[in-house]
Amino acid sequence: MAEVAETNSLFKKPNHPYTEALLQAVPRIDQRKELKVISGNIPNLIEPPLGCRFHPRCPYAKNICSEKVPTLDFTSDDHLVACHFWRDLSLTGA
Image (cartoon, rainbow, N blue to C red; front, side, top):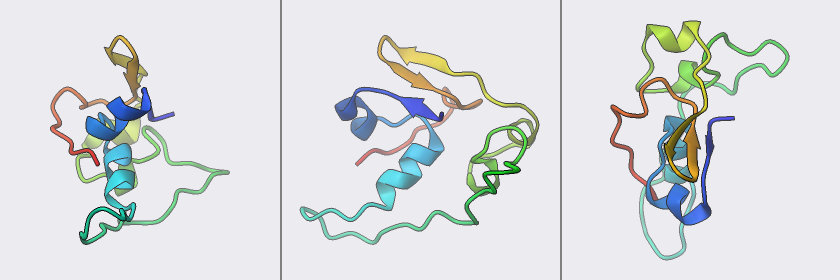
């Protein structure tokens, strides 16, 4: 699990890089924009990578991301995120 939040909160202010990447890859009928591709390959589900499962594809990953699974932290009353660096990131929503 990467992130849990109320829908509007998640779309306005994602706190996990994977959520941000997914939002940037979704076409929108109300906007003409270039869709961004999530780099790398989908992880092997039988033998997932150590640490954060998104770290091989994450532009913000550091060494700890490949070594330790991040804990699921509250960012607010109803928003949870599992990222070592969520406090340091300024991610964009939809």
